[in-house]
Amino acid sequence: MAAFRMATCRMFDKMLQLCACEASVAIEACAKVIDGKYIAKQIRDEISAEASRMKEAIGVVPGLAVVLVGDRKDYAPYVRNKKKACESVGINSFEVHLLTDSKEEDVLEFISGFNDDPSVHGILVQLPLPSHMNLQRILNAVTIEKDVDGFHPLNIGQLAMMGREPLFVPCTPKG
Image (tube, rainbow, N blue to C red; front, side, top):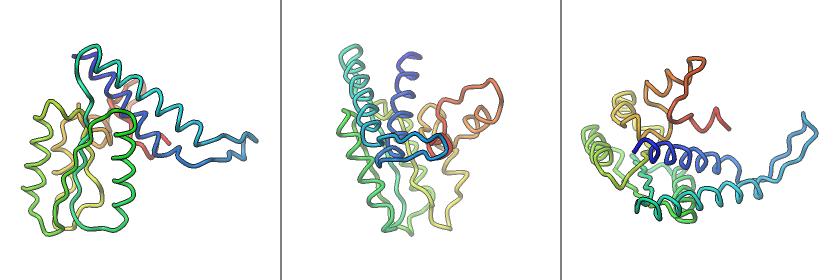
């Protein structure tokens, strides 16, 4: 199971990198131009191959759950792209969308359900959350093994300590 967890971690890590590589990027400081679309396709192909190997080897299809709270218009394209990326590489995508005035306990209940669901291997909580919710309590509710954003205190601590490997590195600093 440890090998499966590490493979899943690598796969989700690559998928989050994919979000950062979708557009062509020029790196002026190195005087090297890279093709973001080509790199994104390479990453997608690697993830797809790994997801297929996992399905064939152990009969498990990786699953990513996204928890959304509120009706922010800027969420829609980001979440839609995550869902499309999952579908394109053979990862199951689960989404829960709660109203802005939902109770914190409702969010925690869904996170708990995803934590306990063996078909979900990664959980993303879309930020920001409404102001009436305790951000730390909600982010800490995601088990470290499924925290693909890398926000769990143990992941952050591992990231900050030299020589330690967090299960997941947050996508933004990695990009």
